[in-house]
Image (cartoon, rainbow, N blue to C red; front, side, top):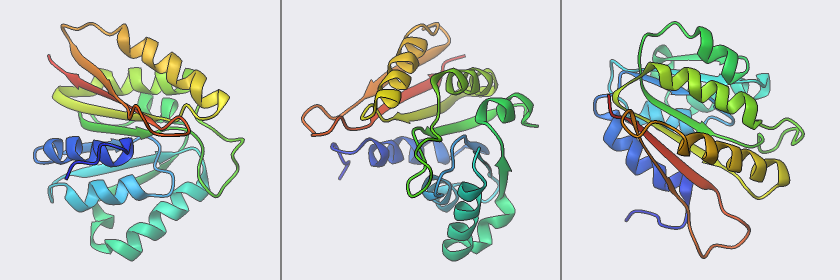
Length: 191
């Protein structure tokens, strides 16, 4: 059953469709590793995942989770320390088939370190330049804090301004959930 109450889980259904053919996958905010593990657990054996985070603790947690749950997939992943905007600018790939972002702060870490709309939009811009035809990008934003609300608003404005001849853009969010639930933004390259 497709979960209609949870943006993070809902996007997995979109990923499963994309992962059938995706070869280059980028998790621009790997955090505690949940998304990276999911992507590696469902991708093709010839796929490669680039997992990026600005915090070393996030990369450590992601690596530990990978080693515990799917150690055989370690050869399919690069863990990259750095800000997603600067890493995507220099990432040595010509195309990206699936790009994902889970914004906000790292749970069980310093909540003062949060994604910011300026660097997130710059990262998306760089990543979307490389997004393959029919390539997919999903972004989960968290409007429950003032900074998160601002990031979601800026992100929505940026995505809404994209050329509809080049990208299909949409949003998905639960409407009757308490505490300002996460918002899912979906972008697919048309040409």
